[in-house]
Every structure is written in C-alpha cells, then in structure tokens.
Length: 373
Image (cartoon, rainbow, N blue to C red; front, top):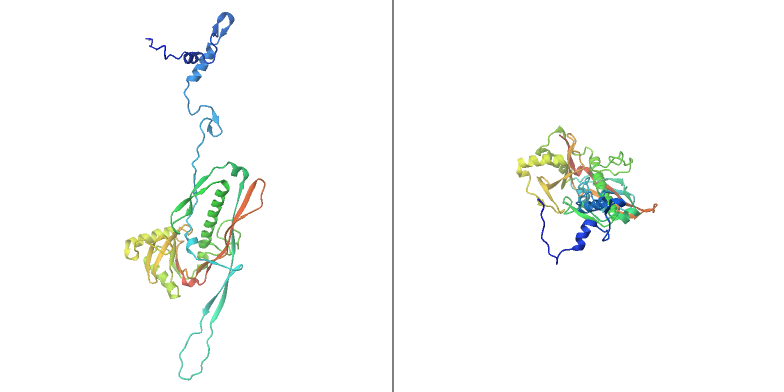
C-alpha cells in the first residue's frame, strides 16, 4: 500500500528534489511529447540509476594493476628468503696483510736440548724452519641501478639484513631510502655470505662454489684441514667420546681449541647427547665474543659450539671442527670497499670488493670429527 509522508515547507529542498529526478535539465524542459517524437525519460532513468548505483571495488573499471579506483599498497618491508647466518666472518681474527701473498714462517723441527757430563764437548743442534705462503684472493659483488628505478622506487625496509647482537645474534632491519642504497645493501650481504661460504668450503685448486673459476677461491677450513687430526666416524653416529678424542688429538699436537663449528644436523645430534648427560654442558653463557653458545667442558677448557649453515647435513658427511683461533687468521689486503664503475646508458654501475685469504698457521693445533651419520 502506497502512502504519503509529511514535510515542512521551511526545510523542503526544492532544487535537490528537482535534481534527483531530472539531473541538470533546465526547468520547463520537455521530457515527453509523442507528437514531436520526444522521449527523454529513458536517458533520465539511466542517469538516475547510475547515480543510485553502489560504489564497489570494480567501480572505474580495470586499472594497471587491479581496479582503477583502488591503488595497490605494497608492504614497505622486504624479506630476504635466501639469507644465511655468517658467524665465522665475525669470529675469525682479521689481520692486515702487505702484498699479494700471506707469507709466514713455521718451525717444523727442533734439534732439542740435551744433557752432558762435566766439561764435555758441546755441539750445536739445528732448528728447521719453513716458509708458508698463501695467495690473496679477490671477492666481488657488482650491481647496477637504472635512472628510472632511482626516480620511481620508494623507500623500503630490508628485513633481517644486518646480523646483530654478536656473531650469532638475530638479524636486524635496515632502511633503504632509495633504489641504489637498497642494491648496495643487498650486494654487501652477498659479499658477507660469500666470505662465510669460502671460510668453510673454499678450495684454492678446484672451486667449491658454483660459478667461481678454478683457482680464484682461497681454501677454507674443510680443505685446509684435509684429514689432519680426524676422528673418522665412517658413517656411524656421534658419541660424546668422539668429542674428547678430537680435542685430545689437537692437545697432543700442541693445540688448544677454543671454538667448535658444526653442521646444523651434527649440532642437534650433539644437543641430544648433552641433554642425556648434562654434565658436559652448562647453561648457555655469554662468551667473550659477545654471543651465547652451548659450551663443552673439555680437557683444554670450555669450548663454545656454533652451528653453520654452510657445512653439509648429508648423513655420512656431517662434521664438527675444533679450531684453535690463535693460529687461524683472515689476512686482509683490502677490506670491504665500494667503488663506482663506468656510467652505462642511463644507469649507475658499482662494485664491492675484498682482497683476503684464510690461513691456518698449523692445522695440527685443530681437529675434527668427520663422516658423522
């Protein structure tokens, strides 16, 4: 049933009511006259219906990336899904180096002291020295940013770009106010991860990292240790006795290991053993390197153990290395350096570079447990 409403002459909006029905048509316009073939009611109805139509997500039609009236709001945080921890870069002492080779001397044999009777003839004994030499290698990361990218890209936050709170602390976010700064930060991270990989797996003869020409890497811990002081598990499970034996090997050769690095799988194997015999492990404590770590009580004292993302987790290839850091050095000819390259087209090209090489002055001061199942 239709009905009529009440209104007040004082508040009635004449112009609004007219516009609601007839839009912008002037007053006294003819909207229908069959004798003159005039019928504007269809157009008025269409305009009226358009005015009443709901505003939806599809209003305005398709845009360049979705619907025209609704812009795309991109999260300003970028997550590096390939990130890796790089504790060894921080833990191994970095030592300046002059020249393209890290040269150092070692004593390989001593003639030895002796006893004699009174007034006996005394003959000197000979000490044997040897010169060791390791070539400095050259690490690069190259980037290029176009002018259009610099002009059009907003600022972003690279999540987890910088490791914080010591060598094994959590990653912290890093702001990138423009495209070039973002690319420089990413390339710096690439350099860090290359260093960590080389420290563990580098091979100066046959490159261990895909894409590196043979002879361009420096040898890392795995290559330098070879089979020296190896506790060979021969694809059997790790035991706590293996730890004692490996440390003893280094001790008997004059070493005092003060850091252990393990594959993550071997690390969890170790935790399982320690949880069964808590006497081997104290609660996590702050070490002088500035991070907390599981600590082994051994014949040479406490040894912190850290997991590595670059050691193999394959059964039969897992390992734990015990390092005497008094003989482990990263020799540095030139530390991380930024340098602009040639201006190519409408773009800025740049590189980051490091000249360095890892040395272990005496691998017999270190040891490892290898081929863990």
